Amino acid sequence: MSSWRARFDRLADTSAVVERLGSQANMADYLRDTGIAWQYHAGDLVVPEDVALDIALVVDGDLIVHGFVDDYVHDIGMLVVLGDLVVRDLVSWGSVYVGGDLRAEGIVYGYYNDYTFEVEGAVHARALVLYDTSASYTTGELEVEVESYQPPKAQLRAARDVFVPQVYDGGAKRARKGLPPKLRRPSYRRVCRRLHEGKPLFRSA
Image 1 (cartoon, helix red, strand yellow):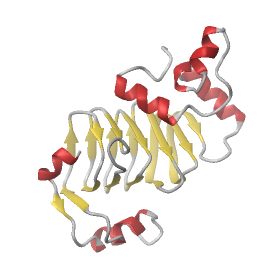
Image 2 (cartoon, helix red, strand yellow):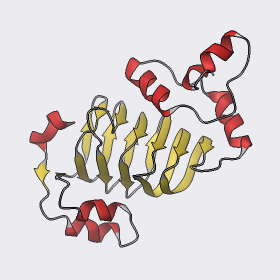
Image 3 (tube, helix red, strand yellow):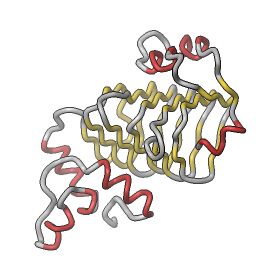
Image 4 (cartoon, rainbow, N blue to C red):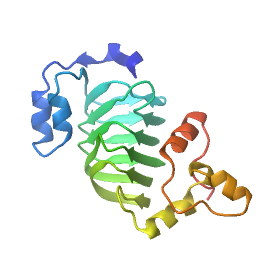
């Protein structure tokens, strides 16, 4: 996404965006951080490709990505979308704030406890997987949901039924032995790797 910098404006004063987010949004703290160089796009933004988000970006409108978004490839990115976010898949190590709905065809994966995952509207996806991250959202249409801290076994079983074994640590080896993956979350790193390699995350219907 750094290659798109020419399309964005430097957001030197983030106070108006902070005000629109509200005092309860954790993302406001990052917007107030003068050490972060925020970029700004006015209006809706359509990206016709996969996105390696390595900048801090505010989209004042909807963001539609015809591919996946990964905010930890070259550097940790941060994303504020004041409208809806529509993606094929989203894997996030950094911080994400969506003022509207988040809609994904496949997976939404929020990972790591130093950053935040906030959606003011509802999350709609085939699978929402969170791991050790501060999360605030409303559940929309989800085939599978795995909560951030202590997901019940029923959630882990449901996830195991829809994901390919290769997204689990040791899953491929167990599959060769005719065994299901161990009852745990899909591996964030394995999910990211398969997205970048263009390999499926989900079992065939």
